[in-house]
Length: 130
Image 1 (cartoon, rainbow, N blue to C red):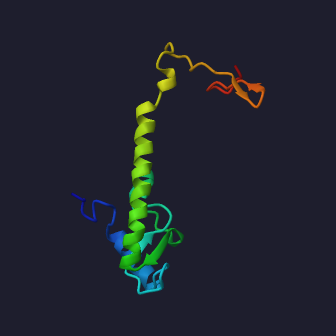
Image 2: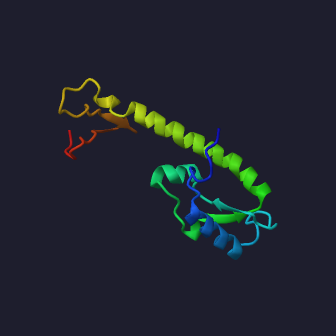
Image 3: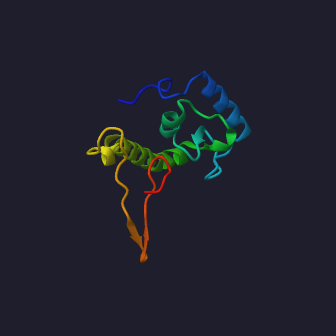
């Protein structure tokens, strides 16, 4: 079940911001119909909350949408959110994999890579070349 709007970050601060934003932007940014929703233009709401813990109320990050356009855009946002959290989970699960077999206090081995016939060495975590 989906959490309530308050739990999803839509507090009184957001409601006041959205009300002012829609008054200043009364038409849908996509189709031009009457706007009813203040939409997170670039970064979906769930990602913004995960990254910053709150909504950034900079008007440059929002757009006014009608309900129909918001619903269509929401499907694309859902895909972005699912990809973001899947990648985040993978990073958290694999964090430190390169150090798994290393002795305590050591860095993972640096591998020599071959790029177009030139060999390059990696750089250790402390910035010194191997």
